Length: 136
Image (cartoon, rainbow, N blue to C red; front, top):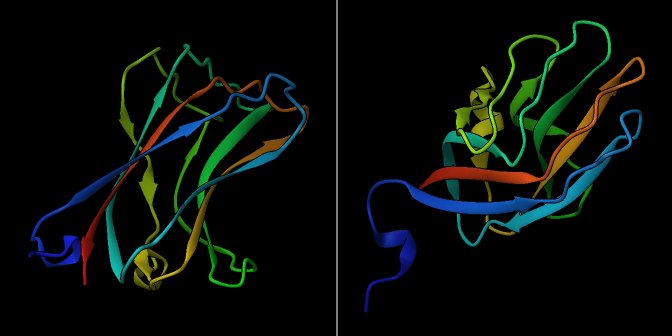
């Protein structure tokens, strides 16, 4: 029998994310627990509604690694809505961290999807975050 981590190539984990209609409210959603050591290779965001960016009042969608103890602060990927609009149901790549260590997960690490706000913020529609990762 072959274990999932023995398969080569990217494994894709689809994380449904609830929307946050209150523009100024940050929020954080549990995504998943890494089942084995992994390296994140790509992260995509597919919003259920269009998003119009605002240079002053915006949100940043982040993928955060809380670690096994829940206190981690690593940010493997993010997408800011200070610039660049999104279309409903059209996937787009989130920006991966330039710090190699942020892309490495240990078995048991907890990933969350977090909405951070700037100024009075911007409403965030529901959507799906797709995490592409390889066993390491």
